[in-house]
Length: 335
Length: 285
Image 1: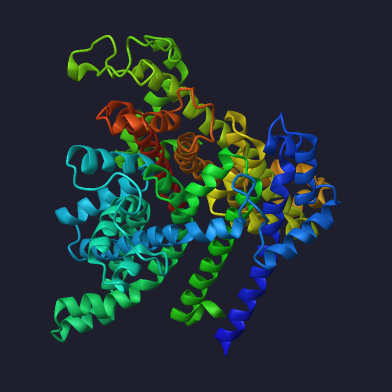
Image 2: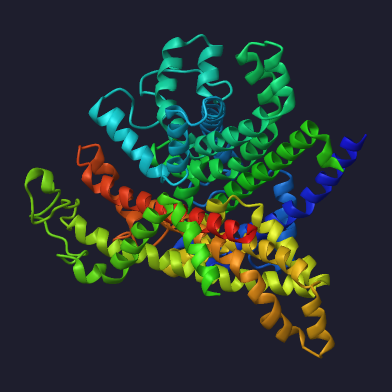
């Protein structure tokens, strides 16, 4: 029961935050110094074109009317029309979204699996060479600019070694029937192993680059959380009764060390969403991060607003989910 | 006071990495201040004859770190870039400190509607992933070094305001604040004379930790081409300019600026960690 009350409370906090965020996204277009229409269409636009854009964006309406129209449209999934391509913003976003989702999930997967494994192993063999290396890595990992790391990976693995493709999601000429838009899953669903292998080869470098900061963080947090837990009585008991060390570590200790790890996984989502913009730019990955940068370059404000709103929305919902998982794992938090 | 500072220094010295980081940071500050006078060439001067020259590894002592795609000397640009990155970083920290501390103190001390309003805005701004927020601001205001600074500062202000507000809430209940009120001290006087000095120490350490982060965001915006003017020798912008040449095997254009960003961010992070540990140790005693 207490969990449902907590759920309701958290949901009620999300509403004003979302509303506030949408006000910021909406106001963006009004913060442009000078005349937004000139900024978007350029100095040489005809009066007719200017008038058409003003009508389309409703810029001749009072501000609160504009906001209300915008908000009701957004609630119905309508972000307007892209100025550059003349297609619906929603359509543009959804055609690019699977690429970003695939990249982000692959990065989280790498960070969680390797982060927990390295963190646990470092704690288990405390002060060993491996532990020192894990600490060193987690120190370097949070300071490295991932866009530079990505470029160095391209140089090493693509230019020098020639092992992996430089950019994109699929080699030209390899056909793949898209079902979900996630190439790895689509290729498995259609039993297209050639496309699967090719998509995987394209995904490895960007995902590894994007995962670096989170991976470093997870190693650090898992290590310190495990060190705390390994000193607990129940771990000593489990060992004293002669249980296999692997069972003690992964079943008894890790389960209890997970709570701080879940929090950091949640926190790193923000980093991953921001990092996706950088990684997608380095690897010419056709996701929404890259679309955002392109649309900023073209001053395509409806598209910018749509992408930013979608990303913030995703971020708020993911944070909510993390909080709920956290509360579910540790009942003490709810009170 | 003197002994307290000595104790702090002694604690700090125990962390060898932090001491190394301190010296690297000092070198970076030196480069930032005097880099423009040390540069062998004009960092903006282009020349067709010197395009894409390798550096010392190819016995080119004229341009020890090579030249870029427009024939500009890389060493000169890196030295000049140190000044840009640190100037942006420090300005961001100053803006963040002034606005964040003021907001935090006013919000925490006055409470009521103002507190509620400020904290709700803080919540909303924190609902944006940091880099995304900076991009929104740059997209609205346009590119340029001042706008990039403002955009990065806005990322940090809410977090700092929240931290300061937290300390203010404990400080304002203390007897000496009560005493000052009883003696007829005005709100502004109390905030300035009694509250501010007590929240400043934890804030300084937090701000050092932000400096590395701010340099990283500056480089990220420069790399994305939405930071400062791409022709300027900003480290992040240099990376973006060298990207295409990397595929041709001209690695030096991207390797060296990246190493500089990495070194700067790493040293400020380690320095911040060291300061925090030393401060914590001091507080424990």
